[in-house]
Length: 150
Image (cartoon, rainbow, N blue to C red; front, side, top):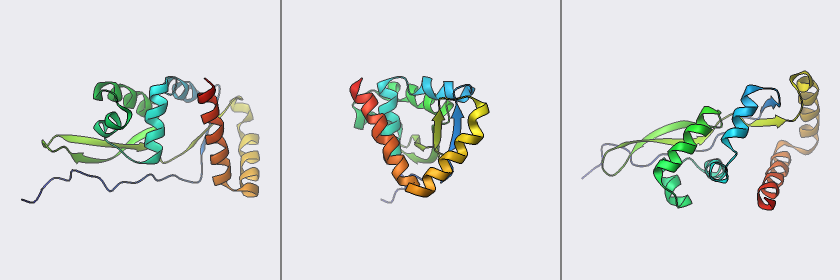
């Protein structure tokens, strides 16, 4: 018997080359910090940077309840760190959202909005010298060290 409803997604992680800059005095920066404050939320976000997933898939991979995953997905989505990219269906026919990191990466800057223009200029100059991939790898390594050192 052929399935009429898709049970899997063909969505992928897509990122733009132009990150938005959040300054410490932006309300959005506060939302990002609050959304990523727990280790669980950080783990959910990290998983979604690797591949799109349904709440059930996230729960399975991180060994947690679907209810707990939904709570963190809502917080991450409200902070615009993740978004719904697709819909698929469970074996029982229930509709499930597929989540992925937002298309626009964010750079959180611990300066004020007044410093934003000079930061963007410095970031573009630096990224043209070493390449955006090297910067992202460096930021990822820094984040992992911060969370590993506790």
